[in-house]
Structure formats: structure tokens, C-alpha cells
Amino acid sequence: MREHGVLKRVLLIYREGIRRINAGEQVPVQPLHAGAGIIRTFIEQYHEQLEERYVFPRLVKAGKLTDIVPVLVRQHQRGRVLTGRILDATAEPTPPRARSGLVADMAAFIRMYEPHEAREDTVVFPAMREVIPPKEFTEMAETFEDEEHRRFGAAGFTGVVGQVADIEKALGIYDLNQFTPRV
Image (cartoon, rainbow, N blue to C red; front, side, top):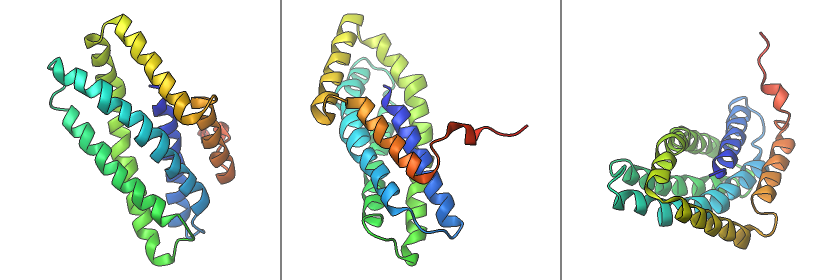
């Protein structure tokens, strides 16, 4: 589920947007809108849809994580609401009165999805490997990859990562070295 890497990078884009808005800088509407667009298409309409269709039902059927799956689904639903609001707020220049709402929505999205993806990585996906036999797991991975290429073309994941990199470059946050603390 390498899609979580894309999600984490868009969360960094949102953090940079929040930082700029809180510093009184101009709202970077185009990069934030593009980031939210990636969340909508690649995370919500692709990645989450696969989880809800293939992963979560198998876990529930096996009696695993029956307490956490409904929470994850509800978080997917709430995330879609927040993404819609972020897309709306960044469709054109954001008026000053709408900035606090945009910041609140991006912050809420970050606050929810950091623990969400961590729980999936450390609990859900390991449990999935326990309940899905290896042969079926391989077939499922092939189904996911076929769907990825159907939706995103031959470049698939690599193309989406390239889009994220372009947004990071536009915001000046692409250079990984800038995040290294001086000690």
C-alpha cells in the first residue's frame, strides 16, 4: 500500500499551506488545489475504494478488527467532506475571511489521517496478510495494479508521485535536505 507515501507527501503540502497562511503570506491556492485533487482521485477514489471493497470486508468476515474498521470507514467519509471543502476553498483566490476555514480543514485532515494511515500500516495491513492466503493476496495485488493503470495510465503510481513532486517544487519544499535539523 505505497499510496500512503503519496498521502504523507500531500500532508506536507497542506502543512506548508497552513504555515504560509498563518504567516500572513498569500494562500498558495494552485498547489493546495492540486494536492487536494490528488487526495480526491488517488487516495479517496482509488486507494480508499480498494480498502473498502477488498480489505475491510475480508477482515470483518474473519472477525478481525471489527472495532476499528467502522472507524476507518467513517474517517474516509469525513476526509471526503474535508477534501471537498479544501477543493472549493482553493478553486480560486481565497478571500481573507475564508482562510481560517481552509486552515482548519487542512489541519483537521492532517490530524485525522496521520494516525489513520499509521494504524492501517501497523495493524490493518498485517492483519490482512493473516486472513488472506498468499496466492489470493498476489491476485489481489494484481487487481489493484490493474485498477491503478486503468485510472492513472501507464505511469500509474510513478506519474502521481511526479505530480506531487511538481507541487513540492512549486512550493519550494521538494529538497529533502531542508528538513534535516542542525544539531
